[in-house]
Length: 227
Ligand code: ADP
Ligand code: ADP
Image (cartoon, rainbow, N blue to C red; front, side, top):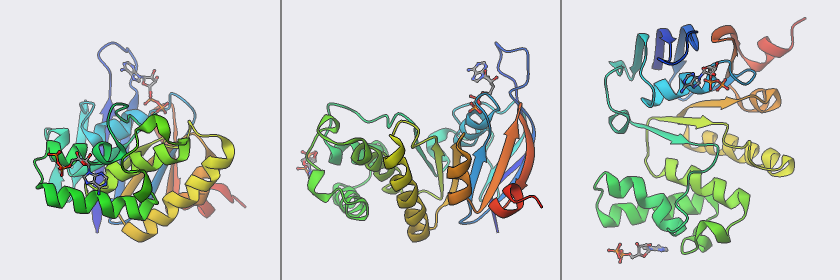
């Protein structure tokens, strides 16, 4: 079943004379892990941000779960996004950082507590719930950022270079953790990276972008093992 459909998507920023994304067409299956890969400036982030509703779509149609989303506000899209720089609130505890989006959406206190504790347990953060981000390691902070997405129980995860601020060793470890998390939660995921190895090891299908265009779509084998 198609979960996210991008149909003839174009993006032109008002202050930029060139198109940043041109005729992007992709059907993403329910539970699929899709990776957008390509050099800096090729339009990966812009495309992801259009799915999130953080950028307007200039032309084309976005569907999530069969519904047209072009004019739907980000908070009503049933997506959860993980950013590169974690975007954690430094003055809040881990618990409150993870709870924030749920409080915003007026979830019951008990429901929030359950969801946060469950996510913390999945991510090995149970002992850290009362700490502030400054008292955590880089990997733990990244897990909190993932936790904030998990608690939402959203139908789609969007991840924009979530590991690029980590050192090489931690990046490899977190890559495996995210892959395991996906096996466990099975949430449809779009993951943006400029790192081919990340794409190869994590993706069900890879979308290679260049200059705002899709250059190739396929499984890691199809895309990288050309005969
Ligand atoms: P990537 O994520 O692959 O690095 P981006 O989506 O960030 O690429 O950028 C794609 C193109 O759009 C680039 O040429 C970039 O300069 C341009 N761009 C990105 N954001 C803006 C913006 N807010 N205003 C104008 N141009 C932008
Ligand atoms: P209030 O936000 O009205 O003070 P609570 O009394 O439920 O609500 O919680 C107080 C604070 O305790 C919360 O804001 C949260 O930071 C923290 N908290 C709640 N449950 C946990 C938990 N399981 N682990 C760590 N901190 C928690």
